[in-house]
Image (cartoon, one colour):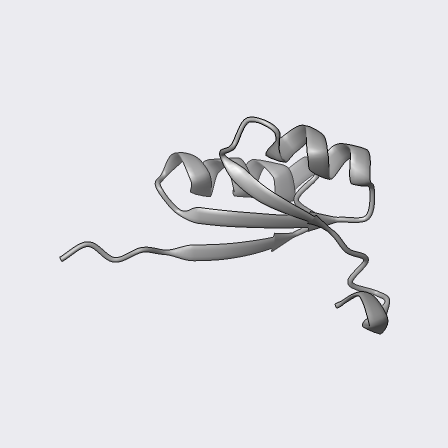
Length: 63
Protein backbone atom coordinates (compact mmCIF):
# COMPACT_ATOMS: atom_id res chain seq x y z
CA UNK A 1 0.00 0.00 0.00
CA UNK A 2 1.36 3.41 -0.98
CA UNK A 3 0.93 6.35 1.34
CA UNK A 4 0.50 9.79 -0.20
CA UNK A 5 2.31 12.44 1.79
CA UNK A 6 1.29 16.09 1.76
CA UNK A 7 3.24 19.16 2.82
CA UNK A 8 2.46 22.87 3.10
CA UNK A 9 5.65 24.93 3.10
CA UNK A 10 5.33 28.53 4.23
CA UNK A 11 8.01 30.82 2.88
CA UNK A 12 8.42 28.39 0.01
CA UNK A 13 9.48 31.02 -2.50
CA UNK A 14 13.10 31.40 -1.44
CA UNK A 15 15.94 30.11 0.68
CA UNK A 16 15.42 27.15 2.96
CA UNK A 17 11.66 27.04 2.33
CA UNK A 18 12.16 26.75 -1.42
CA UNK A 19 14.83 24.07 -0.99
CA UNK A 20 12.60 22.07 1.36
CA UNK A 21 9.59 22.34 -0.97
CA UNK A 22 11.51 21.23 -4.04
CA UNK A 23 13.25 18.45 -2.11
CA UNK A 24 9.97 17.07 -0.82
CA UNK A 25 8.44 17.25 -4.30
CA UNK A 26 11.43 15.39 -5.74
CA UNK A 27 10.93 12.72 -3.05
CA UNK A 28 7.34 12.20 -4.21
CA UNK A 29 5.43 14.38 -1.77
CA UNK A 30 2.45 16.48 -2.88
CA UNK A 31 3.64 19.98 -2.00
CA UNK A 32 1.91 23.35 -1.75
CA UNK A 33 3.94 26.46 -1.06
CA UNK A 34 2.80 29.86 0.09
CA UNK A 35 4.60 33.14 -0.07
CA UNK A 36 3.95 36.87 -0.07
CA UNK A 37 5.16 37.66 -3.59
CA UNK A 38 2.86 36.47 -6.37
CA UNK A 39 5.56 36.53 -9.04
CA UNK A 40 7.77 34.17 -7.04
CA UNK A 41 4.90 31.82 -6.19
CA UNK A 42 4.02 31.64 -9.90
CA UNK A 43 7.64 31.13 -10.95
CA UNK A 44 8.23 28.22 -8.58
CA UNK A 45 4.91 26.49 -9.22
CA UNK A 46 5.11 26.97 -13.01
CA UNK A 47 6.89 23.67 -13.69
CA UNK A 48 4.20 21.64 -11.93
CA UNK A 49 6.36 20.14 -9.17
CA UNK A 50 4.51 22.14 -6.52
CA UNK A 51 1.26 24.07 -6.20
CA UNK A 52 1.36 27.60 -4.88
CA UNK A 53 -0.74 30.23 -3.16
CA UNK A 54 -0.07 33.85 -2.33
CA UNK A 55 -0.43 34.29 1.41
CA UNK A 56 1.17 36.35 4.17
CA UNK A 57 0.90 34.17 7.27
CA UNK A 58 1.42 37.22 9.52
CA UNK A 59 -2.00 38.51 8.39
CA UNK A 60 -4.85 36.46 9.91
CA UNK A 61 -7.30 37.43 7.15
CA UNK A 62 -5.02 35.79 4.56
CA UNK A 63 -4.68 32.47 6.35
